[in-house]
Length: 509
Image (cartoon, rainbow, N blue to C red; front, side, top):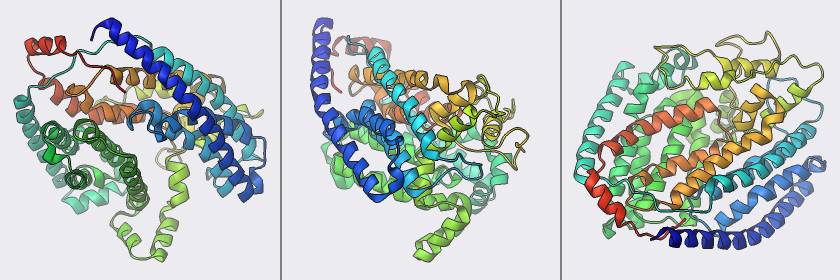
């Protein structure tokens, strides 16, 4: 496709998208108001001015969510996924906090949480407008197809099999170093061991825990032109096996995100390379992941005793009390940041606040994340700053009294520079979404980079809930081996040039 034709197609896509978003905008207004009325009917505490900026946030981010629900974009479209997550993050989570009256523990709370939720929602509303503008800037209006990264398939499968053997051997050695799987589980669910031993093994885990995704990449490459592998029976079987591999290769370490993000990545490979997934199947998978996160939360604190949760409701209730993990905590604590960010805002703006801004210290330490701790021990900057903002000066005691919270994109920014930077931080959300959307518009199968595209889309929305050190760690750990395999398996340059010259493909989302 010539550059002129590509640009014409791009302008047509943008014009159609604008028409579609008008309808989604109306749907978002209607749905948010309907949900708000339901909350008001259920609880008098919802009647407060904070619902105005919270609802406006839901409308602004809900436009993309309804595009996604109405099948106006691909299920792995970054705008759509950010919209769906954003509706919960900016709209539902604050309302649910007030409805359930569940808040950040172990702190002296403000007199009225709703007031600070409202102030934070006002900053978020400004930020979402910045996000929508900035993502359009980074997306641009002129596209040409990327020169594809094409694999030498024989080399890819040979190196892939070799990588599987290496990663399997590495995982076995990890288990052996703890005296077997049971010893590994005991170490993974002991907080002292996590601090003193497992935290020093990130580079080993980046190798040993890559087995499942390498296997899924190989299956996607092998099955993409073979109709017999496209049946739902085959694909569901593949996903079940993949899930079990994820549990064996790293899942027993207690990181739910490590398993969940891996599952989403695997589904994305099958969706792009083998067969598109429908919304009902995706929702069924989402329900499974929520149930998994609930039960797996017990494992993180109780180890093998968490198996009692499958026995009876009373067992689950007892485990919830012992581990302090329940369904509400999962929904609001693991997926939302409303209370911690509202409390940060309250503490920083409080007239007698003793919190001193970090002025970039947490970001500087986060950039050291890829360096092994055996070479340089990183200071506990984020936990230190978080402890000070929650409890005040002199209240940080390493490994005893320290805040282990995640603060999210804007929460970490407030630790460093205060509330004034909150709207500006949404430029980074726009940067991620705009560039990834542009990348997807310019690529198509069999470009090998699409094997890692689903993982990249996760961070297009989850950076709202992550801190920089988590983003760097998760990206390095999960992408190191797969990207190395892809680069090592690229076809010779002559073939690359020939295929690039024939890449006359229409752009698609």
